View 1: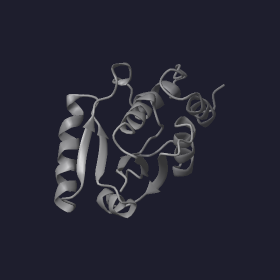
View 2 (view 1 turned 60 degrees about the horizontal axis):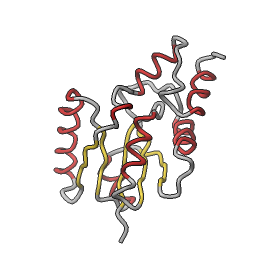
View 3 (view 1 turned 30 degrees about the horizontal axis):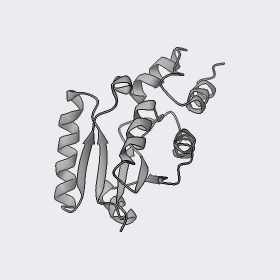
Length: 161
């Protein structure tokens, strides 16, 4: 029986921090399902299809990483793909309260589902998708914050050269 984990997020866009957690999680799971979510509180810059394509490109089409779109409850999606682990990233103490509350609700809804909190590498801790979008929107350099294909997608989406 393989160990399957789900790493869910909006990934708008995928950053080097996201990539770091994906690659490192493969050290203790056999397969990682990256679940591209719809966050009803956010207005995404990229479509679902664009985000899925960027994640596949950024992860090098790794056969152990499956990228899928999902809607609804994460626990239902995890059940559907056979996952018993949820991967969540914590960049700062400010992330903890929300993530802890979500982990408790997920445990209430699906007691067999465990949440694992991962701390990003030191060189990616400060990176967030919202900051990347803001820097890119004002023409700042994002090449060291995201995969080259994502940097190019940002330039094209924002009408920059």
